[in-house]
Amino acid sequence: MATVTTQAEAKAESPSTSAAKLSSWHRLAGRLEVLLPFAAVAIVWQLLASSGFFPPVLLPGVPRILETAWNLVSSGILFGHVFASMARLLVGFAIGAIIGMILGLGMGLSGRAERFFMPLLNLALPLPSIALLPLTVLWFGLGNLAVVILIAFVASLQVMLNTWTGVKTTPALLLRVGQSMGAPRRMIIADIVLPSALPFLLTGLRLGLARGWIATVAGEMVSATNWGLGWMIFNALQFLQTSNMLVGLATIGLVGYAIEKVVFQAIETRTIVRWGTLRDRAP
Image (cartoon, rainbow, N blue to C red; front, side):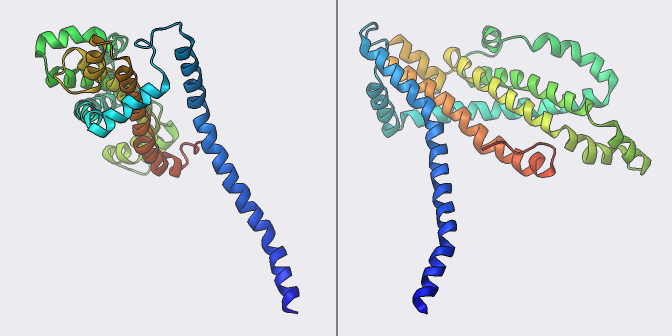
């Protein structure tokens, strides 16, 4: 009787065990799928490096790049450059985000402010950060101040535009409901306008951070001292250290990707996805 019961339990547990194994295989396949594009690029790169069409000093192979990356990481040099760049980025981005949110909110709530600032915003948005570098260096000199101001300026434009868009696209029905219930203007802004504008605001913060990151690297190439990813790449160019340049470029991309995953996706999931304003991302 005990044997029959054990066999029955094994049969009953078999589908769940199979489902668990299938789920683990799906997770493994998903991780491998993420790595597949990088593996393909590495293979193509190594084939080009081994073809002999380019000198090794200009196109180092994948093993040489990995060795350089390990040396920079183990010595702590790469972390020093990342820390210097991140410090400049965070200070400049924080200033630019605050200014952009205040001005964007004011433009969305006031027609007079919109008419005043919108032409200036449209004029400044197409300006690339690299074109503003000579002016910031001329006004603020070499060093951190010029880079931070450049980051704050370019980041504030994207935050300002998207905050204004979010405020202007607040559903009129929600505003009428708040007004009909006698809610004061401050409550309408805090409980209706800002939550409705949050998806656009997060988009503006993403774009502002991306442009700020570009401005950080560009500014460090011209205005920074001895630390920063931009300075690291520019210094490697002068000594034909191509592998150092490639490690710096890869680090810039990885840091930007980490900020997106760790910061913005977490905020997005806990706010607009939970509220139902935005659907969750596909796995």
